Amino acid sequence: LLPGSVDQQGRPAAVGVMGGGQLGRMFVHAAQTLGFEVVVLDPDANSPAGAAAQTQIQTAYLDAGGLAELARRCVAITTEFENVPAEALKTLAQQRPVAPSGEAVAVCQDRAAEKAHFAGCGVPCAPYAVIAMAEQLAAVDEALLPGILKTARLGYDGKGQVRVRSRAELEQAWAELKQAPCVLEQMLPLEREISVIVARSAAGEIVHFPVQQNLHRDGILALTQVPAPDVSAALQQEAVACARRIAESLNYVGVLCVEFFVLRDGRLVANEMAPRPHNSGHYSIDACDLSQFDCQLRAMTGLPLVQPRLHSPCAMVNLLGDLWFDDQGRQRTPAWDQLLALPGVHLHLYGKTEARAGRKMGHLTLTAATAEQALATANRAAALLG
Ligand code: ADP
Ligand code: MG
Image 1: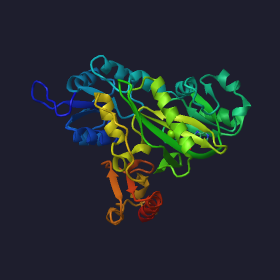
Image 2: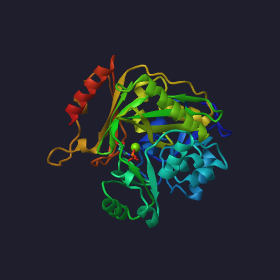
Image 3: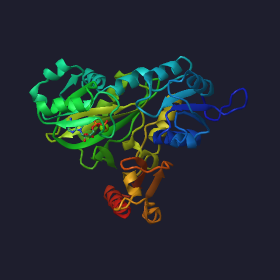
Image 4: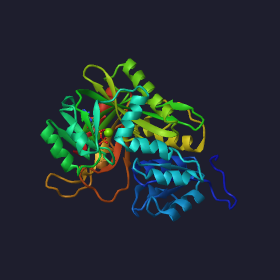
């Protein structure tokens, strides 16, 4: 699986990725840098990763022919999205190394399984109840209210969640969510949100990225700061230790992100995890000597994993589709020329042709000599674009 190796036909070794979104696109860039070809499997003809890869297989994720072709072409396979059918990964794993495994991904896809896993490795999470049947709804402990009802599967960017204050609101919310299997979580008093990304190899080597401090707006990540400015060293160590434990006990191979809440009383609580690189780790491309996508490639191919080092304080700002519209709702192009005149700006656009409100179109990483300067430039960038 060494970079630059060729097959019997003289073709460069290829790695495969399930899914063609922006995470896949950034993975493609990392893999191509080491001389690998990349094959993307995604049903969408206009996928951001497919546009960057050598080859896109355009079939459904469970299409037997598509999966067979991916396995035939690739020396190892990964996923760039959480909701890839775990069955597809299991099918691929019969022929090729697949990281992360379908089994690990299945745990991350289900909030109830995820929380049970946190508890199983001694990592605290919010008090919760599983609501899959009317009897479970009726039996809910009042102590969980006010709370947030979340669909157990397929939620992202705050979608599939309803905040509820009373039993009546809870019943209404479950009806709104079409009585899908859910978890009800107690609403916790958040001081801030952080995340930790780890990468683990099949041999069990594990490395981690520095703690990321995250600010969400309307349920969507808006700003990530590294180093985390408002989190004590002790708490950061605890978060890293928890993330490593979670990965180890899943026998995880690949990149895993764990989101945490820091509560007002200082306690650390795990929120959710993602079996892939994460939006809060995009800064690592520009501010670390090894990015989360480099680590994904290394972990899946069995290449050495080296502890990443942050070489610059930074701030990462998401660029949502809203920026492509003015106050009157008319389409416009954001002022990239003015933006690129700022110091330490790293602009990443994902090549999506259609801008929509709330859609992730790109991100900016601001690197600077100090964390304060990075944040100041992030604020100037936001003012320029807004
Ligand atoms: P998603 O999959 O959409 O990211 P999350 O479970 O991470 O879903 O929830 C989105 C955001 O909602 C969190 O980042 C946090 O700001 C808020 N949130 C979620 N759960 C709770 C909770 N139990 N208490 C307080 N805030 C919460
Ligand atoms: Mg989240």
